[in-house]
Image 1 (cartoon, rainbow, N blue to C red):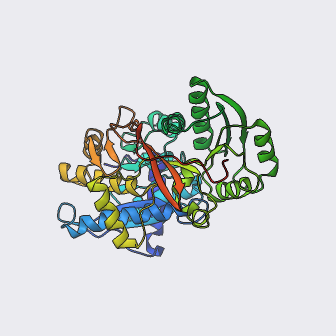
Image 2 (image 1 turned 90 degrees about the vertical axis):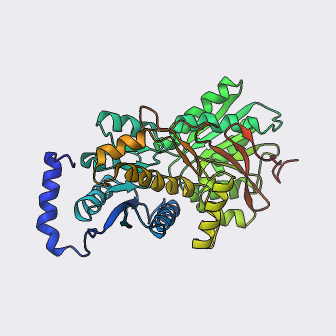
Image 3 (image 1 turned 45 degrees about the vertical axis):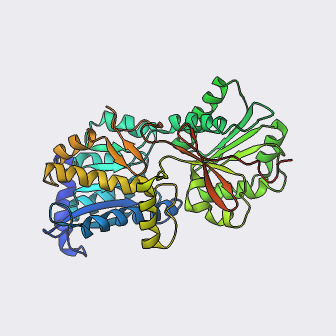
Length: 405
């Protein structure tokens, strides 16, 4: 049942008064609505397209198999653009109040503003915000139906550094430079990486925080060259930040250094620079790509048949799994509107997905690891993203980059 807070009652009254002027019907009685508040425009549009494709692929398969509890699932999207609070509030009003959806699913939905926007309604919200403050805010607000289907920023920072060491690459120096954006994800991941490096006996010789409109790297890269690190890590969720960094670093590289561009390197936002051959040897990572097993192969084949390309190694598998997790819980409960029971079922599912096992802890997120949901380290080789590490298991051989002597 929806918890009718004073704020929610005001929203509902406004929605009722405006109903006559709103275009488009609410979810039909013979369908179940799935709300997808996703960024279809702006910085994060490349990820938003992946989210929508993953949701629709899973829903199309569910509907082709007879639907959910005998009903067809209808996907209703809402563009949350630059992830601002007003966009998230509008998404809640549109998807929940107007359209009457039974669940909200996305890859990430604001990394903070999505929680106060969606929490008051008590419907399941499954996301992949992957930042510490979202988990903490969810707990403070008592949002029992909100699930982060991954680990969080700081944990991934340490995990990625350990994965890089796990490749067996012979570093001549134990020195690292870290450049990061000003989002919480970037900042906290950089902190986790720096701490893991220092615990391993490495020295952090350079750090810099940059805004998301940074495309000129002459000064920063000059300082990095002076510090002479063996590993350079850039973490920012805007493709232009990474592509310009890679392009300009290639003009005057540090001969024996490895370069990692973090999560953005797994997204379609870097496809063009990879196709141009400018990113050869660059490292990247993903939180939860599909595994290379029978289920993962089937998913990849279905994706290619539907969209005529390979599934991105960023969010495709995770978002697909989120839909399946929710559908499994609904089937078990037998009523898509029994939100509390569905949340309780999700919390205890231990769901085997194509990106690993979804075992939610008592804080409603998943701790990364080889036995649950392994992060994956990638390297661009011959124009392709090649998996080097899956969790702490070696999956491929690292290559020295083209600029290395």
